[in-house]
Length: 393
Image 1 (spheres, rainbow, N blue to C red):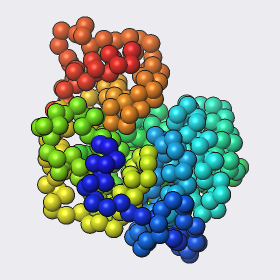
Image 2 (cartoon, one colour):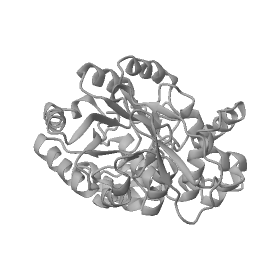
Image 3 (cartoon, helix red, strand yellow):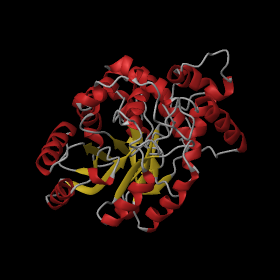
């Protein structure tokens, strides 16, 4: 969805206030200057969540930096009052951390910064952390996540030890783990470790309601919960799903991103969410979601949206794990395709695909007589995998 489409849904863009209050860890306000080029108007309504045992008070809509390339948008978000920014060592080949560090250097005492490592051993993880600190121009991270751990066996003793060492040395304040799917297995297993302060996980309107008791269990354990992939495939539905514009419900097309944000925000067990933001229009609309209640009309809109995307969007439920006779990590490959189509990040998607083991990356679904993967949610798995292979191989 382009910026003008998102603007037309809200009617008018939320302008930057002259002064915004940025809460400290204790909730006391600190004044931030307005960004240049936007007329001061009434302040947006911010709501905050306390991130579990960390005690950090975070704006409930935070800033996912993965696809951001415009430093001024990050700076304006901090000026406006957003106080949590999420990046990772691998985003944009390391350039994302560098950009975020430059943007937030002057705000460092007013904002929280998290990054991630995909390393599988202690030495590599700690090396990643030192690089992250250098690129982000800071002496510590507020949260350091083990990145994209889809199964419990990906969280080994070495990477847990790396987080303990980093805490001991004052390089991180809190330890987190991120996972895109497999919630039914991951959440209980990660809680049992009694190690993590924060979970960063996929959560959106397409997911099975069976996840809700797991969120309650994490809340009872005082683990902070951060939602990602909240838009269910990005903010450009027509481009992502290649839907014929003449067949796409205009209201659904324009209203789905805001409704999707509000759907996540209505859950009190989610402390904050980190939608990707690429420009000021998206920033304004995401901030506006904090002051807009989820309505019955939003529910109907998302129900229509779900039917539109059913054959195409992987909900990362984990059901397909191990089903492919060729050994493909189906959910991962479909996620890479989403990065290209939904986020417009072809290079990142191709890099992820080509990082797969050679014997996996060389598989071609066209060589199979029949697909062995059955998606309970109706995703056209074989066609989607074939498309990913055509694009990235």
